[in-house]
Image (cartoon, rainbow, N blue to C red):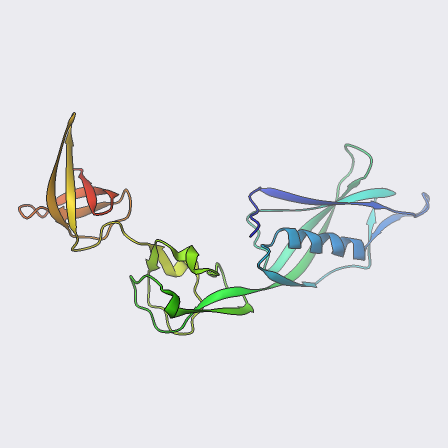
Amino acid sequence: MRSVGFLTMAVICVLALASAAAEAQSVSGTLVKNAVADYIKRSTADSVETAIQFEDLKPSYQVGYKEVKLVVTSSNSVVMKGLVTILVKALPAHRESGFTQIIPVTVKVRTFQDILVSTRTIQPHAEIGADEINTVRTETTDLMNPVSRLSQLRGKWTSRWIQSGKALTFDMFEPVPLVKYGDNVTIVVRSNNIVVSDQGTSLQNGTLDQVIRVTNGYRDNLRGKVIGKDEVLLVN
């Protein structure tokens, strides 16, 4: 899977236009279309198939130069699915600076990929097993953050009820607590250079660095920061 980690991406296509100098210069809609389609392809993971529908593409666009380059950009906050507006910059091909013309292009991007679907109803706080899911090829245009591989759920469990036949998305999961309610825990006490420990019981679920309530059998109002599996550091 290709990851896009820059605030701005650019796909540059240098176009040599054969129009007469006296005439108004233009770039064909086909060249703009190809540049946008290539940009979307580069911005999409290899495992995702796309179908692109151009909503407002013109046959041609007037530009201020005889030879131009098209630079297609967007920030990494733009999700390449659904209705998307892409900005195409028309720049002089052989100069470092000059007038920049912006060509907005609106496209509808449909996405298709393999995702995981539950084969039975799954309760909250359950780790998903291979016998509880199927891999299905389907359209994911309106599905945000679908899960495509079981390995992506390692160290996570369900945060809600998941009905049978439901597509799995990452918002349905949360990290499995290192300490669970009712677990026996080691309560670590640090004072200056002295470290001692006591045995107790967790009164809450807790992930790494989370402060939870614990008891050592004598006091129920102890608070400890989770520092490892079934281990907390006393903070009060």
